[in-house]
Image (cartoon, rainbow, N blue to C red; front, side, top):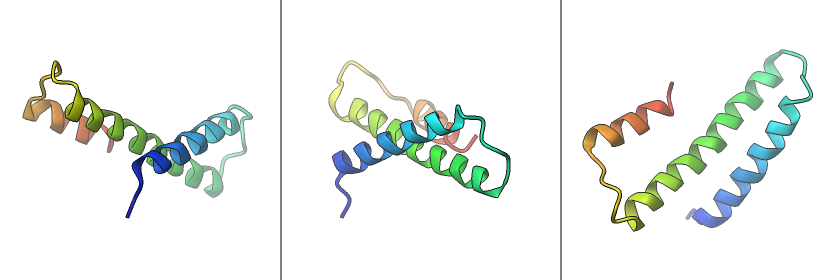
Length: 77
């Protein structure tokens, strides 16, 4: 079972760590590509969890099917 709060903290910490690393202008290569993919995964988790909280707890926000599909497909772009 996945605890969203713990996972969100772990993803936020790793994303921030990777952001700092990317600013050091690391050499290109396979390792850098793997880290970029990891960054995308951590960032996607954080964004999708924020969207879920908005959908669950913000009654003023109205979601259409198109809104949801756009958010879903943006993570793959």
